[in-house]
Picture 1 (cartoon, rainbow, N blue to C red):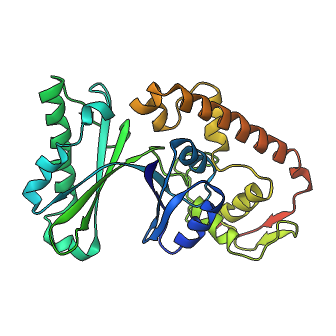
Picture 2: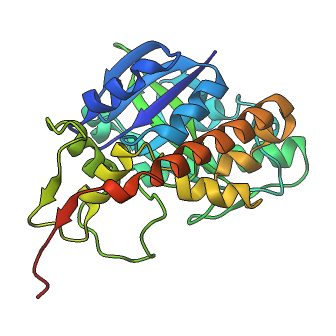
Length: 287
């Protein structure tokens, strides 16, 4: 079993946690901004494709203990980066420092650069070539979390973003569309109402209709990744994990993903056939 972390907007962690009740997860623990869990990769991918509330799903790929900021570089070099990604692939790095120790470090951007140096130097030493950085659309998006380690030192946790993009991006909006409410937050709000899916639903200040669209997807069982999965079915590698080294080498997980794609698309299209009985009403003013 592997360790994962599902992130979400602050305040809806319990809603996200409840979503995971029907999956084969163990060691579930709610924390600020999400929850951690252990499971097999196939189950994690299933959750990634079906969660309406999560922002991102991360796989933990390594952790280490260090005492000072200057020790981070050598600690990070102990991870076998050349086995995780290829030198011809690109990477981007984010860093999140726990609030209670934020003042100890220079800044999160500096720590991201330290981790980047550890990765590329490992490749130079072991492979002879180094991967490039793509800060917008890297093949691998690593998140470095820095947390206190009891009374001594700090713990660095390196997480890999499996999708490579925020999961609130369902694909039904045009790029740059102004929608003040993110789709996963809208879904969480709907899930926390007493709406029973049978009654008509009205939003008198609907804006761009996010609440109504998410409610309709819930009612008819349309997975939030339905449109991305349609692209996958056409042969387009929409999710970053599809080009990750571990996925490319694992024929069993590729087959599992293919079956999940087919199953979820079928479920969505069967649900959409029933949408002619829908009663979702929205109105607003446009000034």
